[in-house]
Image (tube, rainbow, N blue to C red):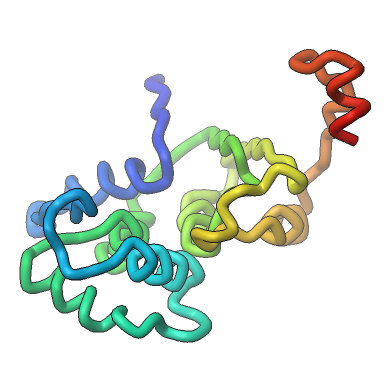
Length: 171
């Protein structure tokens, strides 16, 4: 059986590509566009939180820009995964999620959709190493996952990467 290794975005993109009517170009922030880096960051955070909270000032203008130019951004891939019911055809036996502490609500929604009966899931994450909160990740998703799936917790208490001196100073 083949092993599939993907980011959440790549996984959704591959599933969406199976749809004959789904054609688009991916938005590239390197091309000329009227949005600042701050605009894009606020928009991606808003999208990754499931369109909850205060809508960024340029959100509607950005969405219109994408539509007019037949573009999708990476966050749209996760959302469109539901619009096209892609989750209904995904059949996996095993799922492994690394850096789980950096999962955002939209990604968690995708994960939950592919966790079916008889699927084994293993998530690795350290709540003390979450670094993508500025983009919408939420370390609380670890506890939500544990609650939702009655997941077991295994703590790795030996650090083979750093010397005892580094660990002592870091702590």
